[in-house]
Image (cartoon, rainbow, N blue to C red; front, side, top):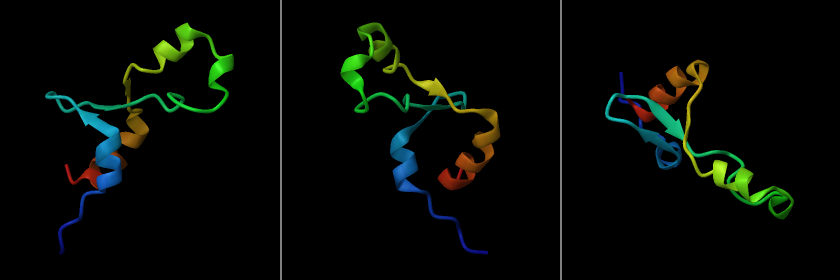
Length: 65
């Protein structure tokens, strides 16, 4: 069975903590209708968000973890 290559694009978008948790940057961080959003809302988008459990297994497989 050949090894699975890691998905480099996903690796750039996901942070892995020392404990093994997966975090992603908030999807609405840039761009769409940004000037209509409040400054507080835009600041909130800078915080990393934990990946949902239902997606975690697939992401780990793509990363080769």
